[in-house]
Length: 365
Image (cartoon, rainbow, N blue to C red; front, side, top):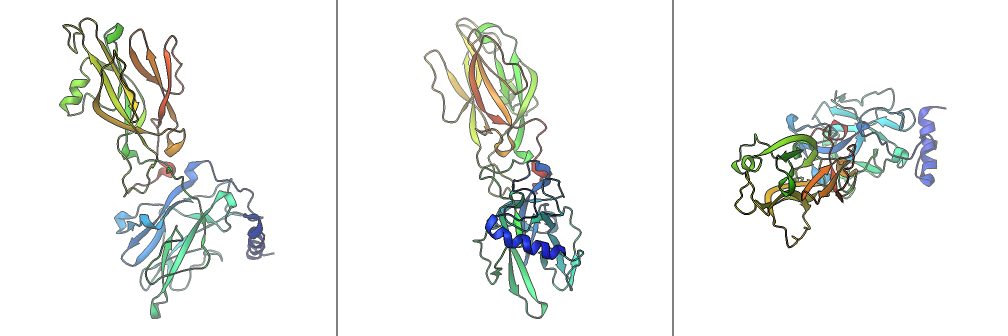
């Protein structure tokens, strides 16, 4: 029996089962290197799909046309032989229009088209539910007279392109993204480091910050005077996602740096006096009120993180501790031993590992 007949039978049964009989799994791949963010691009009247950045080729992303994830290689979890096919990129010779389809028969390109040699290949599934794929990829057509048809694409079936008609069925199915997002661009992140001063007792202070002594900002350099860097902890976001970002995290929460700067009677920041205290800490934006003996004020530093592990690729718990003897707030991450004889203030939020890379080596344009 030919592959075409097998697929036809599988698709017929899939109407009731929400997955085909040929594909061995209905769960999405957990290995993120196989999936990459898929976006619709446009240049003049030419539409195309790509997991690669095309801005240097004159294309602009159409963020209103939806966003999803597509496989960029074969994988044992969702094999090409029984679950996926390559979504080819064919360019019409006459007008450079793009036809995405399954070049099913031995990869033969349709007459009048040439196969583009794309940086990354695209793979999707024929049947909704196979390998957990749930996002339809839609194709639209428009008459171009003697030159045949023009094509457009969308990952959102409600999208309308003037003059184009949406085809009755999707080309194939890709993978939807989380409502929070699949990750965050590297340029939105900065390293969070631990610094500590040389004082003892209530003036001892651990200071975790994205600031650096090499930052050309008088306020920053002054804030770090008397502190020595101990280690790098993780990465945190230093900016919210922008509307133009292809890869964005929609579930960031703001954390504000606070400083209880009480140098004491007759003291200063470099030479504390009596009855004072120094303590830096981050608090989430919903706040913590000062106790009667406290004088925390904002320093101006703001970072962003997420509340749940795994959201947007943030997997590192930022554990918050308070040493009541030294009146010192400090932080540890997973893999470090929990300290003794201190108060456990729980997990402030989740941040990104130092070796974090956007999912699927995503190109941020």
